[in-house]
Length: 172
Ligand SMILES: C[S@@+](CC[C@H](N)C(=O)[O-])C[C@H]1O[C@@H](n2cnc3c(N)ncnc32)[C@H](O)[C@@H]1O
Image 1: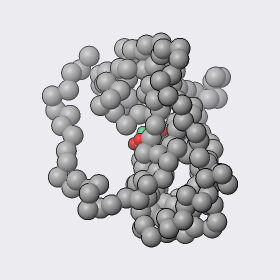
Image 2: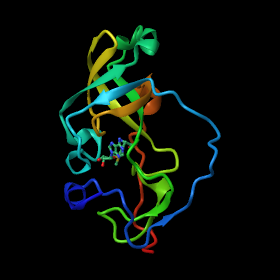
Image 3: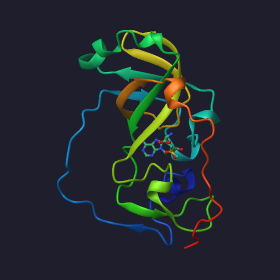
């Protein structure tokens, strides 16, 4: 990490007040990456914070080994994508997001830094070209590994009344 990385927002290092643990040596389970996501962003500073901040069309390349699993996927207008934030720190449990004035628990945040750096987005499926999906609504760096694809059901996945109350947050 050099000065240019910090300038570009690629500094995944610690901020004052943040707390981290060393993860256990042996994981409890393994995953298979099923593909890679191509996006316009190679620098964290350029990357949208969520999929609604951009209109960019991204391409989800599914590995040929898993391509048969895409059968019938076009039936869904929207998909849930799960992906692996491969460039994130993993031990951070209290974080200081740039927008916050205190430390926040990792599990109260959508930050990519977490013990299992799994991210999700609901994307609009624009088209399918063989094993590649053209989608809108992603917020990940170019080359991010893909973990899973599921249809998004507005009837069961949507909670229009859900809220997040930040008023009683600790400032520590
Ligand atoms: C706030 S997270 C939200 C991710 C996902 N939408 C979620 O809610 O789980 C999005 C940010 O993660 C960072 N990021 C994107 N791809 C990454 C990767 N492959 N490794 C580490 N950090 C990444 C970028 O800073 C991006 O703005």
